Image (cartoon, rainbow, N blue to C red; front, side, top):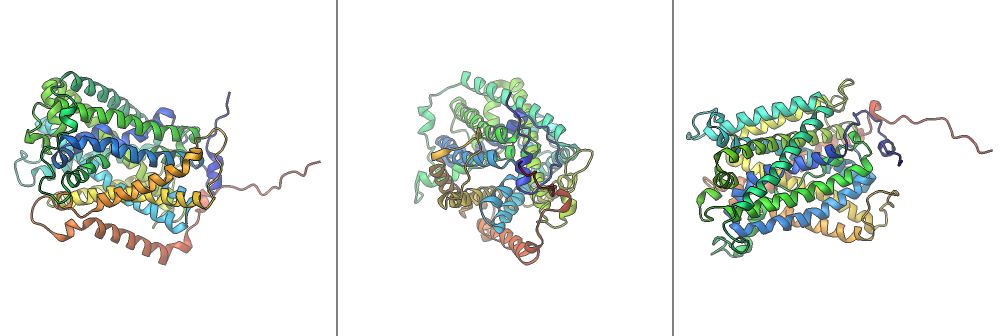
Length: 513
């Protein structure tokens, strides 16, 4: 029987002592990555945007984004096999680049995660009122701010739930998350079957139908497609959550890499079939409901499955949104904890404290929840601002990924990439070309996401320069303020907090006889 590596040797390399509850198994690790990507949340939440911008042919963006993100996932799988540590991106970059680059990767990812949690929680508003009108708690949905305020109320309740679960401990989180992912996967397969039975047109009628998008634009359909591709780019990330739970996973050096690759592959296959079959089963591809946030893919599903079965699937989508928020919250907590135990955040001692009974960092769970609710409140009377922030958060996640794959590539080119441990995942000779593609993809996608398009950052209402240019302005401010605090105040104070430092045995090894 092969011995199980509990991950503590890798922790010792970073100078850390094991404090977190190592209880996550293979399926729970896989579920963490799947629930963050959350195919039912992303495809149903953003279908209307992709279809509205690129027409039916926007579905090509799904395999395109998968191919690019697979390069990143392969790099991350190799890192997870070597360094299964909490706050994976932050700690990986410590081994690959400078301390400042590492801190910036963690800071960017942490900030983006808080906004992503708030944005994902808003998905309740898209599904719950279609499930039952009683979920429209504020007004009847026709008032100017009824929908926006109701979205904040529902989202706030969801974040309260994820805060309580994460504060209680990783075992409860893993059980709820695994059960939710199981329901999501079963529902996704059933949705594919239901849509396949209801097909009304062939794939050729979808894959080459632009719906007239791009006409009259300087770049033609390419310009429209680059905008529509954001709908897929907004979904297929978060697979690194499996590695961020490395300190709580059994045999993490083997489990986490497999979980990363299985999560992104399963999401690609099921999500792609749902999108393609949804378009092939839609009663009318010219129906404006397909490009409406109140219709979209939910509208197609209800049309072809009938009210009863369709609403049963909507319940499964609500479950998917719930566990997606749970996974995003969990990942943000682990990043906070990882940076805090290095004394790299304000009030680090409190943020890095692990509750001795629950064996989980409780203060970060509460803090991340409060910050996410604060971001949610921006949606009450300024939904355009929140839409811009949501897009910016995704840009920042792609930048955080780039702050890992970039230094990783430099390490390879300089011959500093370590040899893989026996029996661990490794790209071997493919490592360099895959790493190059991951960097090129990440840089290109970050530019595409951040490009100051009005249809993304200022789609409705009066044009405002600060909305259209929100991505470079906001990201520049976050990076500048964060780096100023770190470089001027905290850089010389960083170091593993004493209560988290690995205990080094001062006794010298015995002298051979």
